[in-house]
Length: 294
Image 1 (cartoon, rainbow, N blue to C red):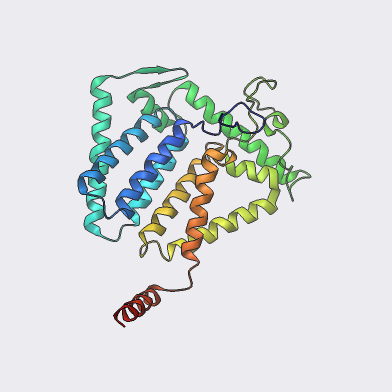
Image 2: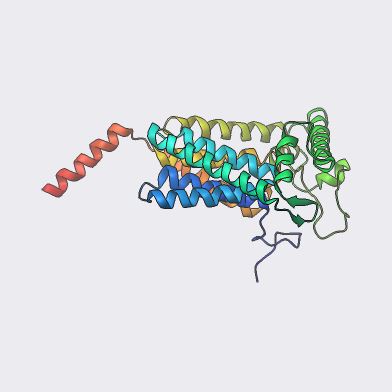
């Protein structure tokens, strides 16, 4: 009964390991940065569960791992209290070390098709991010993506569609010869495996300029209030984390992750567009107090 994404047999409720990593980091960031009413035990429990989910997912997906790491890091940066920041970093480091020790000492290995769930697979994924390293299969996917992106960027920059792109109709994988499955399959690859490169290919330099202006506006507006408003800092961390993960996956092409991303952008916009300052908010609170006393 759940609808599929148009022109595919993929449910709109279908999520990848990288998606779960991002959601886990979002939950950890909220509880530690915004949820002041949560107890210390609850915050630590959420952090341990979140780090475990991110660590397990990191063995299967590198984009989600980087996005989740960005969210966790920006959460620490947004904390005004040094004591709270130190507790958060200490708890985060302890949970991560404990997870690595458990995976290493237990020798846990779960067969999951192309990649296994194990400490060696996790370390290989981390090594493959920086360039040469990891297994032959991992390095092959890295080279494939880099070649794919280079061809798209080069063709869009120097071709006839550099102004407004090719539009949303063409299948980019078929156009550039990077289709990874049978074109007649119900789920062929359509995009560049990179939401930012996909947007450039489909909308050209006009779309890229608008996309860049949007990110600049988001970051500029949020940075002015991130340290004074925990909710603003958390939303900025979420948006940047999603944006980083979108470099390695078609994250924003489907509703599963595009909906929470744009919801976070809208909520952040509503918070940063308030005309009042902290002083104005304080004066407004005093006015309400005077009215109640009268």
